[in-house]
Image 1 (cartoon, rainbow, N blue to C red):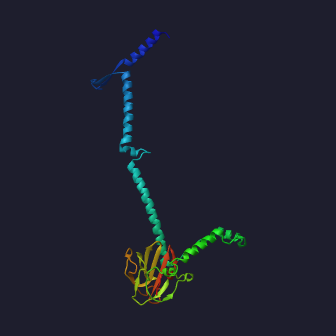
Image 2 (cartoon, rainbow, N blue to C red; image 1 turned 135 degrees about the vertical axis):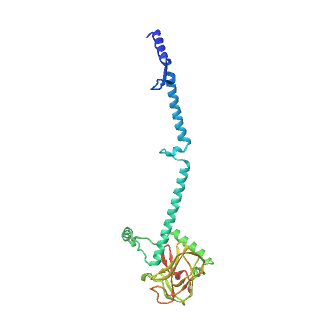
Length: 291
């Protein structure tokens, strides 16, 4: 292609781009000219490009700097993220409180009904224990064990608390003072001690705590249950009068009820006292001196 032809082609392209067109808006009935524009193809391309750029820029601004972005899938504001994090923490806290309350309610149910679930036995551990031959087990102490035993024996020899250790087992305040008519007997499902006391004798709390049950049951009559924390619960049954209500805070040695003989299982004025730890009954005589 010669230079003259190239110049001719460029001239035609320039002429087409710069060729003016007139856009007229007319009244259809009267053909009156209302509005008119003189445009070239170059101007039309420039206006279209600018419009596209402005549209993209406006959309970006709306998404980045206005609340409208929250309605676009995949976008969320900092406030929503913070609220979501706070809700997760609150949910975890509520779940922990719910689990704690469930354990407490389960313990209260056991205290009221006296029913204990029998733990499932792991058969594999039993078979493994049977498979071991006791004759092949070496029970002789090692040299490290012998040294540790000698060290402990030497330290305990000069321990000033050793002689009084047996006296420190009675650490809780006695709920009532009197002779025991029936002791702790888990074989017969008597998870308590029955203390013979006069009618209207004061019944006291064994430690600081919160009343979690105060009411009447057909079998145990007027019953009071106190949560002392750390998984310790005390129960006072067959009372004549209850001096505390659910939610009341009590102190160690504070009078919480008056002894009596209420309930179907009572045969006379006495205090049926139970002590529970982590959902299981324990012998109150190991911790309280009732004399």
